[in-house]
Image (cartoon, rainbow, N blue to C red; front, side, top):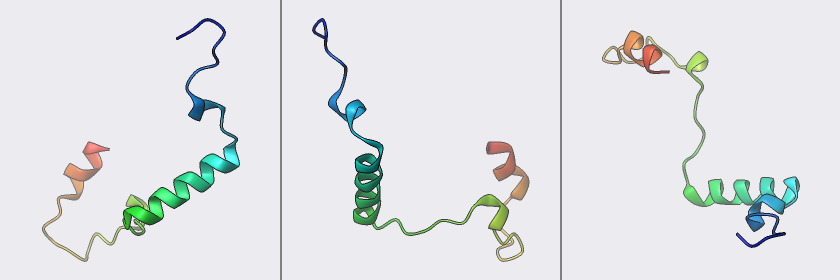
Length: 57
């Protein structure tokens, strides 16, 4: 890095612009919404090892 430089340009962006960019990238990714571990329905599927998943956190 050159002397006197501030760093990567993305570090200087204002927080609102970063938020909009993240929102746009998430929308394009088509990932959808995720449930948190607290909201997961453990009784729904019997083949998920709850202890193994919780230990992985």
